[in-house]
Image 1 (cartoon, rainbow, N blue to C red):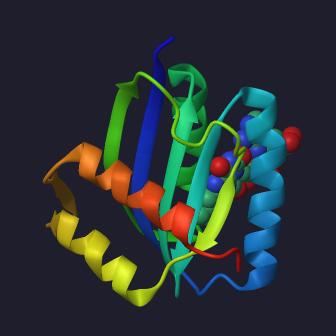
Image 2 (cartoon, helix red, strand yellow):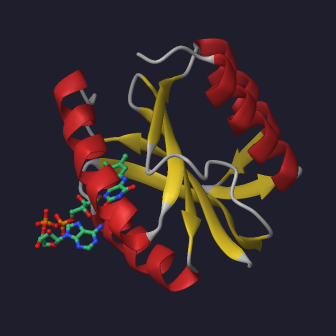
Image 3 (spheres, protein in one colour):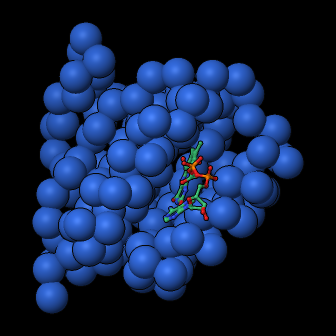
Length: 139
Ligand code: FAD
């Protein structure tokens, strides 16, 4: 069954502290599991990378909500496409902290120009996110 996948990068308006993040995660896991949405959230010092996977209709609704969330200062959609399988099928919303060097590595792969993302390779972006998630410790 084909799924849809959205990956975006954003900067939060204010540094999200541990309390803010646990509230977001709690709420996300509750709503995402009801809608069959999976994914992960990777953060470092207000920089956010999120992967959302699931039914296209449900993802569009959720992504609309997330885009309107005033906690985001700027947002760039990196991937918005159908995929054959989910990468994070067991996570209603996984969460890991990024390292500074991972964020830099990610920025090299995703070349941000005038807020419009030029993706060198969408698969490379997904592979990198998966490797960060698999390698990093839970915060
Ligand atoms: P509220 O004012 O909180 O609630 C209004 C009504 O909508 C309530 O009845 C509530 O139960 C209902 N509602 C709230 N959320 C949903 C939903 N997703 N689907 C259906 N009904 C809902 N939210 C997620 O759900 N999943 C995520 O993966 C996710 N990731 C986020 C990542 C980041 C970095 C940030 C900052 C926020 C994220 N959020 C996520 C939160 C999201 O942006 C909204 O804050 C959230 O959906 C609540 O929206 P609201 O303020 O309009 O609803």
